[in-house]
Image (tube, rainbow, N blue to C red; front, side, top):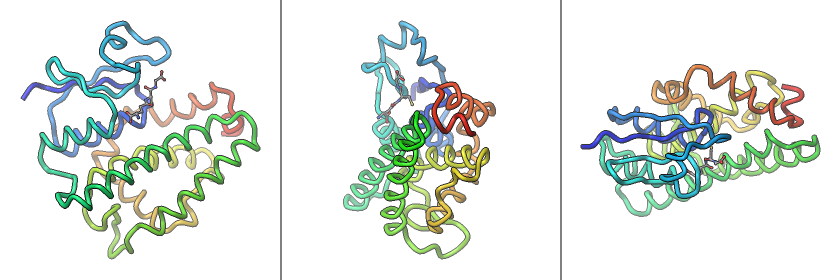
Amino acid sequence: MTKPVLVSFKLCPFVQRSVINLLEKKVDYDIKYVDLANKPDWFLKISPFGKVPVLQVGDDVIFESAVINEYLDETNAPALHPSDPIQKAKHRSWTEFASALLVDQYGWTMAKEKADSDKKRGELISKFKILEATLPTPSGNQLYFAGSQMHLVDTAFAPFFMRQQFLADHNSDFYLLGDFPKIQKWSETLLSLPSVKNSVLPEVPKEYIEFIKAHHSWMGGIL
Ligand SMILES: N[C@@H](CCC(=O)N[C@@H](CS)C(=O)NCC(=O)O)C(=O)O
């Protein structure tokens, strides 16, 4: 198989999902980093909307993280999507939800005024209530979306939980999972996996906080 090339921006949570998959599946791949504030021409030529991630496979280019991950899942063992069509459809629906959470999280961190930041925090908490109710009851120390086994949908949520942890490490007021024991256990399970831990460069926790501060958001001012 041609060695795939993942095009990344260091801080992008959507790219991180694909890295987790590549690591879980032990795929031999290359990674190229671009600066989204200064996009190189070669990148603009291959990424239809100027976004990361894109995955180059020979002369073909695939975009959208959920699609890249399904492609990786179909072409590399172990299969992480359920084979049952209904279960697979449900996992896809919750992957969409995970993408919305990432957008909400970004909005929360970037809000210029406290009132707007608080509103976005409230929206995240409302979504956690729905998520908590859909998760299975843990039967041991670990919890994944579907119980005891990891699936593709888990890789869609892990970058969100990692950023939540980065924020909480700087200011515990920004830890939002305290009232949601199942989500909290799920987050701990995912953040303990080597594929998740190794899915970002070592400087990312620090640079994530610096990125928020550099945008002069309300949160950046008190982190
Ligand atoms: N729905 C897309 C979202 C990808 C996305 O929004 N990527 C951001 C970086 S995290 C991006 O490339 N933004 C372009 C820019 O900042 O110009 C996916 O899942 O791949």
